[in-house]
Amino acid sequence: MAPVIISDPSQMLALVEDQKRVGKRVGLVPTMGALHAGHLSLVERATNHTDFTVVTIFVNPTQFGPNEDLDKYPRNLQQDLRLLSACNVDVIFTPTVEAMYPTGASTRIVPPEVARPLEGEIRPKHFEGVATIVLKLFHLIPADIGFFGQKDYQQTRVIGQMVEDLNIPIEVQVCPIIREDDGLALSSRNAYLSDTERLQAVALSKALFCIQRMVQEGERNSNALLETAKQTLADASIGQIDYVALVDKHDLSPVQRVDSKTIAVAAVYVGKTRLIDNVFLS
Image (tube, rainbow, N blue to C red; front, side, top):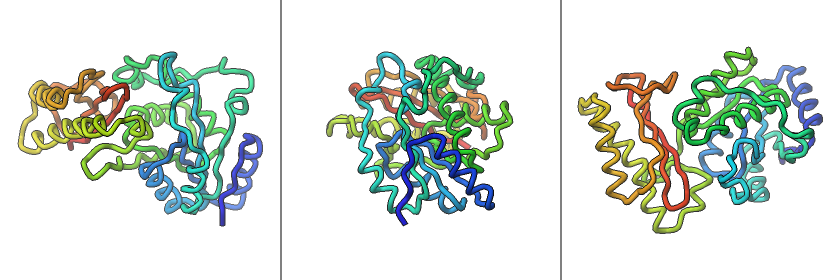
């Protein structure tokens, strides 16, 4: 059966409340559209683990900075709807900006400390916008489980901490990164890459997997690992590196020696396209 498409927030809330009243377990997959196999893996996880799955498609303006790509962020709603129609999704929520922010965005969530480093230093208001929209979605779609991708790892930590701090009755499931055959993490922004840039972009995952391989071979010194990763990026002519870091996977604080709680994270520009990725080192 084709999914129901809803754009009205009140209607969305009423439908989910009806499902919960009859004992259905509700799964939520928040997206900004431009769906790819990574998103669809979250949807598959949701449909397999819950009785009623809601996918949201909303390009949230409050998480974009003044010089970021809000206006050109890829949008293809009809293609997204076709993809989701084949995935046993029950509802697709496609609100407008006016519906989600009817009086503007005067009330914002102050994100937890884990939002400060890495992305927080480069994009200072980003996680404020993320936390605000995710909390709004949690209110409108009071799901049992929310499904999020590991590629946006810091985002998953911000959301997880917000859920814990504010006693939100939802389980946050973090699902593995889906990659192209050559290792590049799937991302809606990959569509920006030219053919030449696409070949260059694989250096990001290559650098992180190089760290992982060195750790498996016994290297534990962060400086040595990071130097090798940065050289891999330099060899691919990756000019702008926002960060390459080895951090504690819980609080994202930098580590001097790698252990089972360490994650390698990176953000770089390939041409004008900003890409992020991460690899666990346990």
